[in-house]
Length: 394
Image 1 (tube, rainbow, N blue to C red):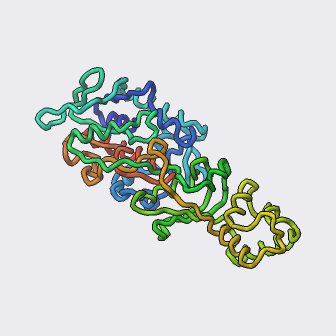
Image 2: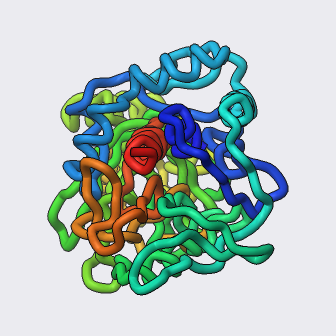
Image 3: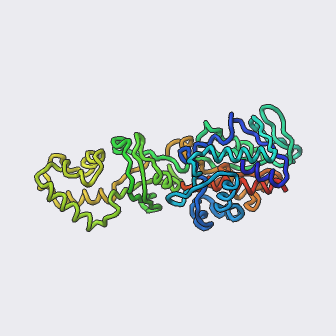
C-alpha cells in the first residue's frame, strides 16, 4: 500500500493485486492489533536495530525515516503516541486506523485494487511487460513485489514473491523465522507454562560465547520460551544445526552476587526452621519454586538451617544464571518476521530495483533484511515501499 501510494503521488497509474478479501490483513494484527508502526529514534539506532543487512537500508531510511512516517500518518488524520522504548502507536490503539488511512489515500489517488493473485511475471525476450494473475494479464513496465515472507501464511505471506523473483533470475536466501519463540530441552519450561517474568535479564550464548544481552519480559510455554525479550534474542540465533545455543536468565538483575547472597542469608535466617521449599516465597514466583528446587538438587524437605554453604552457592548461581538449553526455533509460520529472501546484493539500495531485471522492484519483508521488535520491521516496510514506489514511477 505504501508503494502504491508513493508511485501514484508521483503521477504513475497504479494497480495493486491483493488476493485477500481485504487489504492490510497482516498489518492489522501487528502489535497485538495495536500496530507498532515505527520507533521514534534516529537513523543510527535504526541501523543498529537491523542485524540482518542493515546498511543496505541506509538510503531508504534516510529518505523516509520514522519522523517522515509519523508525519505521513498524522497528515492522513491518524493521531499517534509514543510509548516505552520509543515505540509509536496510533492514539486509538487500533491497527485498523493505519490500514484504513492507507486505503483512503489510495482511493483518493486513483489506485486500482484488484482482487487477484500474481502467478508469474510477463516477460518478452527478457523484458518485463507486467504480471499474469489468476484472473488475467496486467500490462505494465514496472512491477513492485511486496508480498512479504512466509511468516503468518494465513495473512497471505506464502512465499509468492520468492517464486516471482526466481523467474527473474534471482537467488533466494533460505527463509527462516526471526523474532520467533524458541523450543527448549527437557521439561523445565513446560512445567512453568504460563509464567511471565517482568524484569529479568537475559544472556544468550552461542557455543559458550556470549552474543546478546537484554532486559525485560519473557514467557514460559509448553514448548519453551517466548515473549518480547526472547523474540529479540532469536534474531541473533541464525545457525541452528551448526551451533549450540543457551540462555542464562538473571532472576535478580537489580542485585549483584554479594548483595544477593546477603539477601539469601537474611531469608534463610528468617526461615531457619522451615523446609527449604517453603523458604523461597520472597525470592521466586510461586510457580517457579518447585522446578527451581529440583534444579538446585536440594531436598525440598531439608530444613533451611541444614542448608550448606555449597548448596547456598548453587541457589545463588541459579538465581543469577538460570540455564535454558535451546533446541531450535518454532516453525517459520509462527515467526513475527521472515529472515532470508531476496539477497540485497541483487538489489539497488538507492532505488529498490532489481539488478537483474530492469523494471522489477522489491519492498518489505520479501528482501533479506529483518530487525528487532519495537516498530523497526514496519519502518523497513514503509521506507522500502516508499523508495520502490517513487523509483518505479520515474
